[in-house]
Image (tube, rainbow, N blue to C red; front, side, top):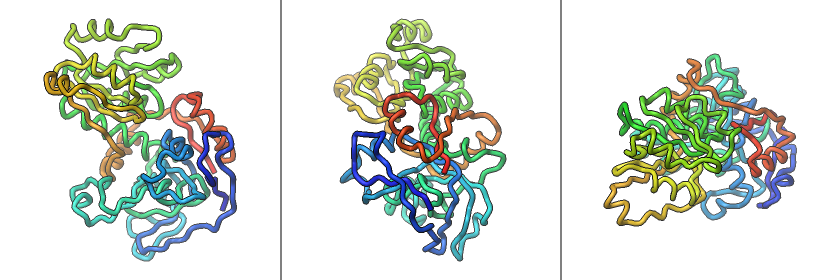
Length: 343
């Protein structure tokens, strides 16, 4: 099979990958499945992988095939697989988990003691076939794999963040979503579907803000003064919750200036540093909450919303052969929505 391989870490995204012919994977464990990849989403995490940012953190062995947002058709299954059959279309949770540790039994599989992340700890979906576990597969009903693939991580991460925020939101509250990119435009739709909060969407690009159809207000942070809008919308009360899909030093500092007393800042994107003074966190009771990829159950819940037509991910399709161009475009911020590669 053809696979896109990363042989060395680099900052030259347009030259990062080369293609190799590799043996097609086969089931090794009794609960393994092999999936013919029909769509693989490109995530900004993949840029971090190419740069080598996870060296010493994740168990990445070069040469390596990334790709953790995958959907396709089951090709073959292990002897004890019962959840799916060959021919089933599936979206794949990126985690491989043991199913028996305390975290797994509590339904928090992303905290599994034996957690393995496809596309990072093992070869991922930037190839024609990929091996994973039946536990990671969610069957698709009336959802195209191209639409489903980005939800394996981008949609799932946004869904988990919104679920966490929803627990503390009541009608009349105001939420600020910072960053209307691949995650943010999904998160804004989920906020609209799952909460009664007023939604403000903020970005530095008008073309990105055009994806924020579900927001009540939009603001370009380069051209407008967001504090004036926040004062008007909240009657100078402040923002109740921030979903930060950027997670830069600038957005984290901005959040501190806009949150109400007792407000929540959910950090979804990463790259910056939380440097709020302890005095502000204590005196204002500001809460910071990191959010990770969701659970198997949450992926099932999210796909139910997608199947019902309530969430519309904006995708741009590319052949897998153009992976280096896609990597460079995302690095330069030239892709609106979610890039999806098709082998």
